[in-house]
Image 1: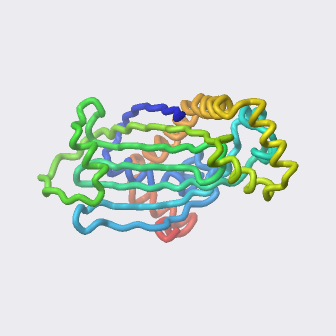
Image 2 (image 1 turned 30 degrees about the vertical axis):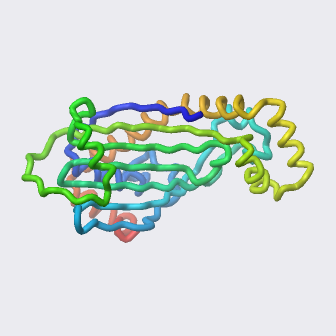
Length: 259
């Protein structure tokens, strides 16, 4: 079973500014106070496709993560490692087409996937979702396809974003049960039996459904914090100008692009 949660939002800023804010949103808590949980950000790859002119970027974020308290209470300590803050990794991929005016991103957790896999997909566009054509969305997925050059268009004042979260738990499934156990306790036999007894008592489907529902219920709060962070970065870019913001980041913490 997969639970999904989709929302739409409008930023009153032009598309190029919103894309810049997206890439800067985790750079520093001084720029975005809602990013204090992000411990580091590293760019794995970044290139511009010579045929399409699209920017492809892959980054990995290390975040300070706390499992939902309800999940910690639901699962045994051998699965969650107990409560408290932990470090986790999030893989982010993005494709930006600055001429056509869209950006597609995907973020997924690399830790605790045996307990819960979370995928966040976003589609930023200069066109409202209810006015977007099927070809515009299919074009965003055809990363390697060629295109016909488009005429210069005036800069739209707003940017629209559709965000979809997908939650999937496989805890207790036959395919993943052994891998989860081995990653936790080295496949120690007593722990294996305890884990198996716990799964049998609750039922795998019931456990998975409960975990997915708990995570989905926290989505609205997560989205609001993410938008607040983007809003702060966008306002600083609007008030001070892009060049001034980047110069200030260089002065305080070094060259943002070298980081």
